[in-house]
Image 1 (cartoon, rainbow, N blue to C red):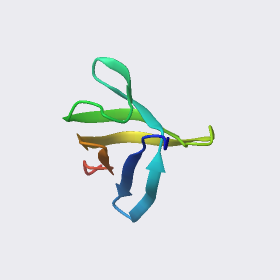
Image 2: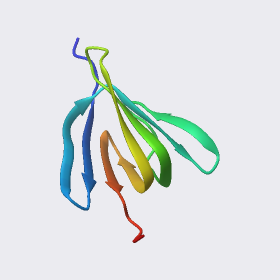
Image 3: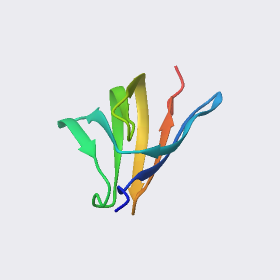
Image 4: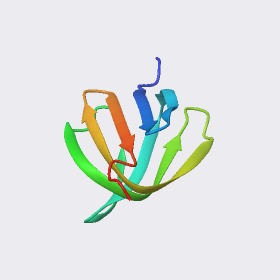
Length: 86
C-alpha cells in the first residue's frame, strides 16, 4: 500500500523554494504550533517563525519564516513566504 503524501509548493518573492511530495509539514500561527498531514481539513492560515518540511524518508528541512500564508486543499498545500513589504 502506498503512503499518502502531500503535494507541496513553497514560494517566496524570489521564486520557487520547494516543490514535491512530503509526509507532513509543521509551522506556527497566532495560536501556536500545528502540523499538516495527508487528508488534513482544508484551511488557510498566516504562518510565522519557521516551516518544517517532513519527507517520506524521515529527513526534515527547516525554512525560517518572517511571515507567510499557507493554503491546504485536499492533499495539496501552497505556501507563500514574505508576503508583507518591510
